[in-house]
Amino acid sequence: MTVRDLAKMLAKQFGLKGPRVIRNLERGTVYSSEDADMLLKSFSQFQEGGARITLESGEFCSINEIALKVYLYGAEEYELKHFKFNNQ
Image (cartoon, rainbow, N blue to C red; front, top):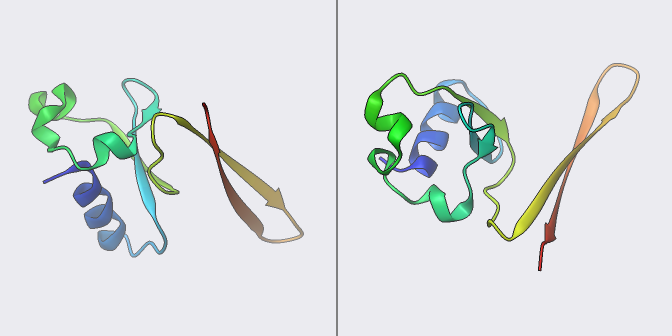
């Protein structure tokens, strides 16, 4: 199973819509698009078991991109905007 497969499987299990990414809570970083298609066993946190992750909305970004999430709060709901910037 890859990182991308795990994100899709978790989103399906929780009934979540839209693209999802996984954040590594040990490093505090989101897996990049370069990591997304790698097998989970390629990462030490998944080899040791007990991986600490969160599932977040958004798309996998390249390591050369910066992703921003902006929450615009209204009366009762909020709107989420995603932006990607090329870091080169």
